[in-house]
Image (cartoon, rainbow, N blue to C red):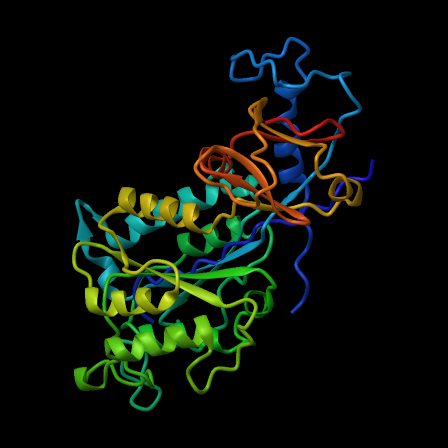
Length: 381
């Protein structure tokens, strides 16, 4: 039986933590290994899954002609945009805000659950490294520039690149929050992110309001700083392209935006304006330290990691009532042909070539529980 090519989930987080076109490579190994690992319990001749519970509905080998197949998670892209203004040097319980943030980001990018789900991360920051010296007066000051290329565009296996980058950089400069968001309205800025035909998320992590303005030229005149309405407007460009001046094609694949307020002193009006327009959460997520930032990442993961999986194997979709799924060797019940989850744990066909895992089954999928997909025996309820 020919197996399906695995298409990885890609999440683009843009983390704002201070101021400032080619096709993706297919990466099948991690997801295939993870899916295969869940088959051991399903193949147990005694009917005892890997959780240790005996279940008569787990099909042992030889009952019928069951074979493995490999559905693929609905793809997602996550870009990390990091605010690296001087305020990130403020002390929090003996460590700087930046040290807290680095710890949480390292944990996120090292988490095998996200690796197994094939999530693709990108990373960016502001202000840029060229903006700390006034080119006219040659005097050093708070920079507002956002002219550097994207730090790490989203692709497979970018985790080590991002970790290396954050371990080599320190905060400096002002907070060009508006301009940093607006850079992603340019499809040439982070082309892998902009052109990705998948769900896309820009996650902004910031401890402060804009301090540079719409033009990104001044860190001295508060009257010129971007207001909440300005931040809401530039965010809406990414989500719906309803504002004039957007050059993105977001009709099918909009860039949804999430805001995290990081540290013990944040700007709620500005962050809520971004969140309101972002299309995911109604308000920003509050995270005061490294531990709370890790919890914020988990909350985001639960919202953006899809429980809808695509099935491209023609033999499977031609006979949809001979499919079974297992988590840790235990059968996931088929909930019937209604195309709706209801309140029970199990799975349904959401359309002709994709299945949705429901309620507790969805929770376990998002936790990275070992997963097996089998074709050839009647679907069990």
